[in-house]
Every structure is written in structure tokens, then in C-alpha cells.
Image 1 (cartoon, rainbow, N blue to C red):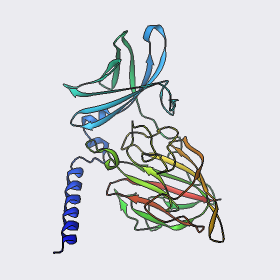
Image 2: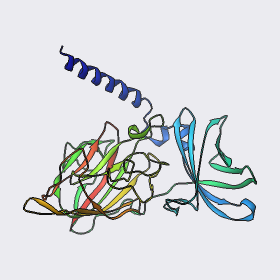
Image 3: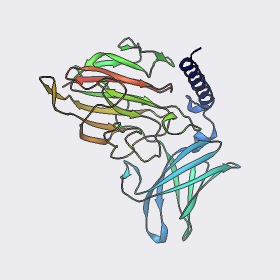
Image 4: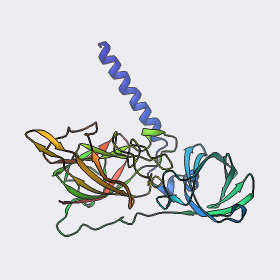
Length: 324
């Protein structure tokens, strides 16, 4: 065996081992995801420090082995009262004997039986939060007259490399046979629950518009909202707010894409896009100054939608588009 072949073989074996370890802590069914999944999620309520009512949202992120991070948002949850730049606090903690305690610089939160008690270092107990489950306003949106249905759960035949999984869902890593120019599109996606994974290993995929511009798909619940996280246009633009719901929750992208303009083989006008994530505008007529890595280079011609695969069981449904 040559040195290059040996290195390749070792790298492949390491990749398989990593996937095997990952798969042991990968959940696709909320009913089988365990107690940590039940704690993880979004909570909302009103705090009353010093007699002043303040709307407050809390996102709790499972990290495996009964450990958690949490982010508190003054004004409400992201996209529902809180925006980038507003006040926020962070905490960390774990579950012991059925009670989860999350400690931050200014106080702590106690989670038990689906409710959160917030305790301030200065004011003592200042309020209670209840768990909420947000739903995208466009979930289940029906294609309008004249729309091209790319996937409705009945068959994956409209995608090269398309495979049905879990009965009627589309597995990531496939390209539409339909080639897209300027268009609007609706699609729905769901990331797995991988509490022990971190960063790009945590449910990674991507929606490549024309196979050229990637809107990231990732379990970025509770993160900062960067261009390599869910909703980010990779290497180009961060989402205006991290609108990511918890993993194993169905989420939506509603996209309005305008193709680039070319003359004599030279680009004279950049493509532009508006994207709503779970009904929240995260990119508003953003100029796509260059293509993103991983698929096709920029060009004048229409090209397929590519749903990127990274070995993660990200799934899609209800995909349709209209030409502009």
C-alpha cells in the first residue's frame, strides 16, 4: 500500500469511527430523545425585578450527559420581541435529581416540571417562565397555482440522488432535476437532536440556491447567528436574527431569489435574495457578491437546487417554487 493510500485509508476509518460514535447519540424521534430533550427548548414569561415588568425569553440548549447552556433574552425570544443588540445573559448548568439549575453572572434559573423560576442575586425570585413551542406561520404552506412542486412526500423522482427516508421525507444530499433561474421557493427542514455534538457536526446540511449560494442548515439553536450557522449565507451574510427553533422541530425557509445578470460571459449584476426563516426576515434583499464553496461556480444559466449532505440525517419536505 502506498503512503497516500495508507493515509486515505486511515482517514476513512477515522471518519467511520467518528460517525459511529456520533450515531450513538443521534435522535430522530422526539418521543425517544430522553429527559434532556424535554428540558431543552424555549421558555417565556414576565420578570418583575424591583416592580418593573419585563418580557423575558429563555433558550435552553442540551449538551449531553445532563449538561446545558442557556441564553436569556430581555424583551422576548429572538424574532419575537428580541433583536440583535438587545440585552441578553448567558448561563450554564446541569440536571440533578430531576431539577435543572442554570447559573449566570446575575442570578440563576431552576427548571422543574416544564416551568422555570428565575432568581436574581439582588432581588431574589423575580418571575416564572413557561415552556413554549413556536411554529412557523408558513409551515405546511400550499403551492399556489402555477407552482412547480419539487417534493410532496410521494416520490423523490424530481431529485437526482433523491431518496425517501422515514416513509415520506427527503434525505439530504440531492439535486433537483428542475433548473432554477429567478424564483420564489418554500421548503421545510428538520435537524436531528445530537446533544453531544458541537458546531458543524450538529445536524449540518445546506440549501444551495442554484447550487451556487448556500443558506446554511444546522442545529444552531441558541447560538449567535453567524454566516456559517443556520440561516447564514455562507461567507456572505449573517442572519439578522438567529430564528432557529430547537432540533427535531420542523422549520421553514421562504426564499425570493433574483438571478445574476451576465453580458458577454461577464457578470454585470450580482444575484440578490430575501429569506424568511420560520416567518422572520433574516436577509432582506441581500446582494450575493460571490458564490459560496462546495458546488457550482456562478454563471448566467439556471441551475438545480442542491440540498447538501454531510452525513447528518437532516430531512426535508414540502418543497415548491414559482418562476419569476
